Length: 312
Image (cartoon, rainbow, N blue to C red; front, side):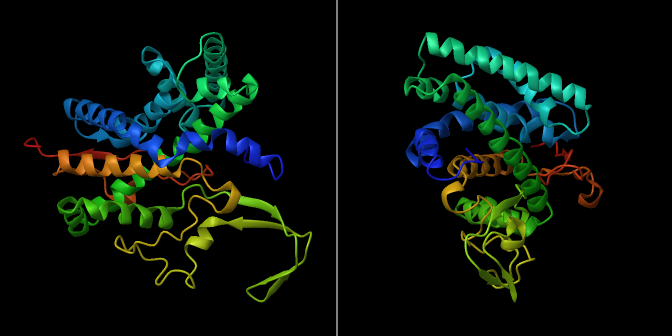
């Protein structure tokens, strides 16, 4: 779908856009809340310091994807383990290839079962619409990659940013209405899906005193747009109360991210729940010592050691 242009793109997007309406996302909220609480319970019961990435950031979107796709709960360990391996930069390419093959085989088998016995979940509904099973498999992988590591890294980066700003975190904890504006600012600042979108100019256009001719190739970097001083005052500063939703962290136009409503909801639930339940949460390693990814297209953190007081 990402590579398609009109007229092929419209029908492909229309077939799945109904899965991501505000109403359908609201229906997922109670289960996402349960997932977040379960992961925090496990983290609190485990050793300190804990790695927030492995304890919360990766499992939450992985398990949410399971819910969306209709992966049986008894298979969630298999699915989550392979997903984490696939997205790890600490493992070898061979390990990731094996995880990729395992996930592809698992999803193909799952889709075949749903085709034989229809289910009321995203994959089942796509099959019920008459979509080709291989197209449904491609969609499953798109959702896995587009909505998994991006959300995981936003959770990690958001938590680190908020812990480094205790006064603003305290204000957010006292007034949960501040969470959504803060999320918009974090999305703008980090723009973690920092892909350079390859396009071709369809008309002459002048940008910054440079003329781009029709037919010229263009690489549009969304990070640059989200740090454009003509669009955002003090664009390189983090202002959690900025409230600007005119960022392009989710893209723009016909290819705007299908799952943005889900991403916002996941982030809101995670931040509100984590800081409410563990008010003494703090970094166990200085932020400038954290290991950031430097070999991936998506900006994020390898690990976030955190600890908390016993009374929490």
